[in-house]
Amino acid sequence: MFDASGALIANAPHIPVHLGSMGESIRVIIETRGSARDGRGIRHGDAYVLNDPYRGGTHLPDITVIVPVFYDNATDPTAFVAARGHHADVGGIAPGSMPPDSRTIADEGVLIDNQLMVDEGRFLEAEMRAILSTGAHPARNIDRNISDLRAQLAACVRGADTLVDTAREQGADVVAAYMNHVLANAEESVRRLLDRLDDGDFTYAMDNGAEVRVVIRIDKAARSAIFDFTGTSPQLADNFNAPRSIVRAASLYVVRTLIDDVIPMNDGCLRPITLIVPDRSMLSPAFPAAVVAGNVETSQVVTDALFAATGRLAPSQGTMNNFTFGNTAYQYYETIAGGSGAGPDHDGTDAVQTHMTNSRLTDPEILETRLPVRLDIFAIRRGSGGEGAHHGGDGVVRALTFLDPMRANILANRRTIAPRGICGGGDALPGRNWVERADGSIEMLTATASAEMQAGDRFIIETPGGGGFGSPRPFVPSEVEGGVSNPERVEGLHTNGKRGT
Image (cartoon, rainbow, N blue to C red; front, side, top):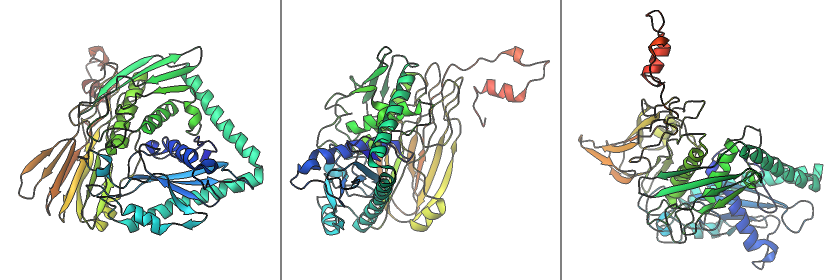
């Protein structure tokens, strides 16, 4: 839910990289269509759709549907509701639209820039089908895209109707006032947080040689902060470029999660924060830069760098382990859990979706019923978290055997550069991926790779753990009393707190 200016008011607590970046999408609609700028204006019963990464989107599979809300007889929108969904396929050079080897945006699928999808209540299906059929690499299953767009639209219409009913019952002025109250409350909560934070910086290298650098400067007197990403690598030739909206989403998420107050994540959280992001850096790329990995991978690096710069949390697995596979008949995409980083008062968590992703995996029974694959292994990767006074969480092992020929793709990070520990904590183990062929041969894969899978071939993914926090406590003989050890305590000392050893 957004106010009339496109400021985020509240959202479902789901995928942070989607929710924190959607305000840019709303503002694009306002700037290009508001007050009849396009010769038509925004009207009752309209809905818009976009995925353009350079104008409010993140990467092409993430399609945003936006519905303007009009209270009473207003002629201009008084609020907006929006829903963003990751579509299983929007075209591109690989099924699933997550190609590890894309080099331009055209390789990644169909780009939708600020398209009218519903014209005063009339769903423009023919026009949407035509758009999804364009380009050298059109969408592979347009019927499914249309169904998903209708579902997103239904959610938005439901939200818009509820908001209109609330304004009718309570008064439009009251609803607008409380939207401002929500923003002001979040702003004050962040200013109180900044009173407790100090300056910091962190530079985080990625497997492709790029670096994300952030310097945090706190102005105690003004109760404000600057997050300065100057020194981050320039725009990349690969697809790990992240649109500026992703930096905003990551920053919003970090400051919100550092607050103990029960408040919705909203734009008020960023009012005290100034973001400095150099143009044509990998965090502010220009068309036609490839960006598909920026949303899912670079967002994790930005988040980990911000947390590490505050000294409050060690880096987590630092990747979403994007795994896609398919052919002309099937397309499938999943992100895979790993270990979360440790903090000054807690261990990391094993086998959990971290930070900018928060998606659930398909149940094994559904996966195997709907797709010609067999899930052989899904288990905790013991010992993969970093050691320390507080240890990082462990990653997972996931292995699938293919029953039909398909192309499988891994788009990941942290296969070479390990998730780092901080404040003396140990680094976690990096991830690994490989293919075991039906004939017994092994093909090791890099962080970004594709493989043509035949029936009987197995794809194995080991995800990274999280970094440790603080130097491990040394073994102290006096902690063994009367010559008889406390098994729980001694195990913790000898293994630096590691479980399962």
